[in-house]
Length: 147
Length: 405
Image (tube, rainbow over the protein chains, first blue to last red):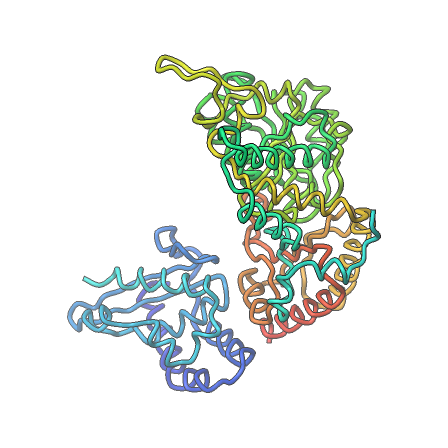
């Protein structure tokens, strides 16, 4: 398995999440429905194989372990990421994050406001402080990939 | 002594009136405070606030009296032989740091050994690691058996290496298991070791008679015993306390200061540098005085009943790995939903306003041995009730359902 392959596998999952699941998520009325969708999203993301999970890919600041891989296509000015987490909720939230940022140009990614995006999905009231700070740690790592 | 009445008992905690929707089962992390404690702290600041041991004025003398009375009350609470054996500090972590640092050079020299167990909280691991490494002392760890209990056979064998210090927890903060401390202390003493007991969970569960237990040191935090945060107790036998080099220098702990040298004060002040947490000590004494008014055996039985109901309820939920044993358990249940991360389970409980701890509970080495990412910990207190048991079991059922759907 290579990063290329992972990116290829991740792509259809993300577009499906973006088109089908996010609208459903933003309309879900109670926490149970929101969390059921989140779990479902996490399962859709292809996992990073164990042997590729190098310690350098670990994102600090999450209660559970999470890994981030990055690829930048210079010619088309596009950033691509692959994420994995041992916790389902985190992975579901990261799936949302990924489908919002994958393929962004350097300038777009720099400007991206995660809190605003999560607000629009009506998720904020359902996220605990610790989950929020884990997500922020991941976002910082993603933005660090900008130049 | 008053009989224990669960409804009346819970009624003394205003927290629950302000948070009626919550089920609080994170008592091993910290406990709520009864009005008796909050009132004592407020009254001190409103009426008696002054610094202790130094003012020329009567106000300071009043504050000193109240502070030293707190020491007497706590000495009585644990049946210490002498009042100077109660040293105030910020909590169990501070006490263990003081002991680990304080025994280097006086007791522990390069080539010596310290023995701890694989069930310890980080507070009973890291201070030893820090100081052992610097002083050339070896730290040994007693492994666990397959029931997640400290392997007593291995403990006996490791005592033959003649550790100078044996430091162990009275009750595991992760699993709730009550260790056979009396037996272990006796064995350690027979092997010639100084004994240290981390009583952060132990002091909560049972009344402790320090003279009967006969450990050299026993430490605990006030906030886990209905008291305020920021105060704790380092209890020691006088001879053992005398062995400790103070970790902090400054006011209160000296009798004479010259630029060339200083003379240390007598116990307990020698180990209480700086202005102490006066209100904290008064608050903690209010907690122990309040607790002593109730029959603690009845409290223990009530907690055991809740725990039993909880364990029974868990049997009806499929797919759980329960790490805690119901036997010799002080009211803590650590478990996992099979194949799921504890952070997810804890979050789904949080969504249902059930407060638990999810993760490694400051015991990373314990979980690495088991190859687990952590566990979800439910810890009970005597202000919990049967409704809390029912609600938390329902919430856990719902969490499992969402996770495995």
